[in-house]
Image (tube, rainbow, N blue to C red; front, side, top):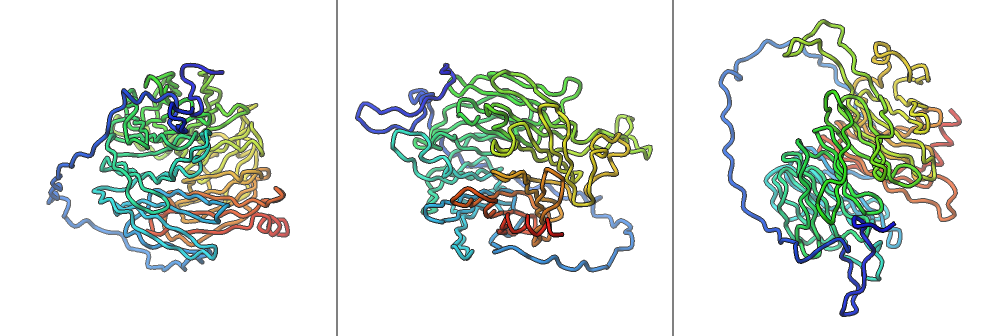
Length: 491
């Protein structure tokens, strides 16, 4: 149904040329975004008191055996931790593109040959702070209709406030935008990829740009704390943002106004950490993970909170500790990764991954946990409903928290990444750990997966897993899904 918030497909302009600019854009009110030089910030002086030598405990000198590196290739171009990764596989040309950004204030584009030989190019902009977000519009180019195809772009966002656009095919800088400070997230519009959304972890604003003209279309203002995730709805009609203020906001691109605010916790707002879209039969469900151990599911169109999923309960430490206000300290397990099952798997399922190392699968028809996946042991359904005091012993083990998760597009399988540097593949029907990949020696901060499916549509195909880690490396792993499933059934 068309409404004032709808984004129609592009039209033909008066000159008879195809126009890929979404119809909600009023170019007469757009403003050109320019770059202003940043002021130098003097480093803080060290406190002499901090230099006092403190007594140390006896150190464990045991040397852990190095983990086997089963990756297909490693890119070691970064000189500091890598925070953001994205990738795209073009089946027509068999080209595989990866973009990475990290704490060394740089971003790289990596192209892989069919034999996994990488070519890495440093992107030219001189950032003055960590590169925190990267995005590609390649998956959406050509989706707008009208016949005109937009150029393939790379978006790079940094904590220095700069958003830089590059030509994906040449690596050349196209434009530098400046808007929000401390850019935390980037997202291209699904209809043609000509509109870019950027969220700030510092001031809580969300900015929307028209990439062909490099002009700012809207600044969405309303969050009372930093934005941790942003996206467009799958139909492109609304912009979404999740925040540390505990709210999910739905924005109208035409007016720049907040269409609805979901406040998930009436007693005490807990920061939202992550967001997943395209849930349910109509694709209008959104799921957000929270620092309080819960995940919340909301329906954008109906403006209704559908479910509160308690991934991990807030539990007392039991050690008699007190916080600064004299209250008993509690342990919580933040939910750091969420996603809905693809429609080919089950439109009523979603998944949550927490820093407790557990992957939980939920049935939205009952709002109950239907399966728990853990690398530590086979977790029973009794564990899913265990009291808080028992549940805190049913974690995935030290260092096995989940930082990212991604569903297989057609099978009930989920890949997860972890602080222990491992990638794990679970069968969510029975909770079985199907396969594990090693190679990183430190936390995996980000993960993206491209699936190459069989032409006949039968089987699990091949998964190309791309990871970014604190060990300063980008790695690519290849998983033959059918083969690892067969091997796990034989064990």
